[in-house]
Image (tube, rainbow, N blue to C red; front, side):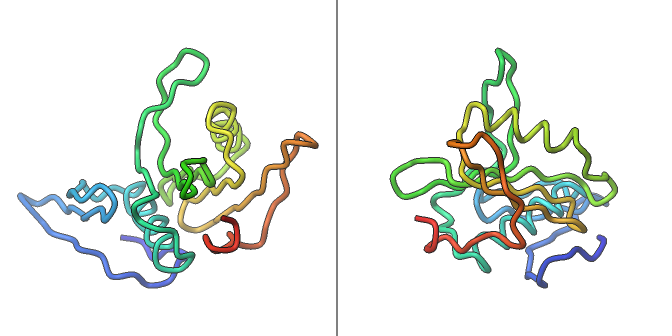
Length: 150
C-alpha cells in the first residue's frame, strides 16, 4: 500500500486467499484492505494514538439519514456526553479531494452537527472548525487533541 501523510502506525494485516485484510481496532473486525480502508485505518490510528481520542467514543461506517436518503459516514468521534465532536470523511489515496467531498461532509453535518470536520485521502488532510453562530467554517493547520476540545 502507498505511504500516506501520517505517522508510521503498526497495523495488523493478513493475507487470505490472495486478498489482504486489515484489522480495525474500533470495529474489532478484519476488512479487505482497499485504498480507502488504508486511509480510514490511518485516520483512526491518528485520532487514537496521536490526538488521544478515546477509542470507545469513536464510531466507524455507520448509517445516517440525510434528506431522506441513507448515507454512511466514515468516522465519528463523540464527546463523553454523546455530542458529535468530529466527522471524518475518507477517500482512497487515488481520489482527489474536491468541492464535492466538502459538500458531502457538509450534508452529513446538517444532521450530525459536529464542531470539527476532517477530510483525508491520506496524502492531503483538511481540518475545519464549524462556527454555527456565523454559519461558516475555518480551516485549521491541525486537529486539536481530544482533551483540549472537551
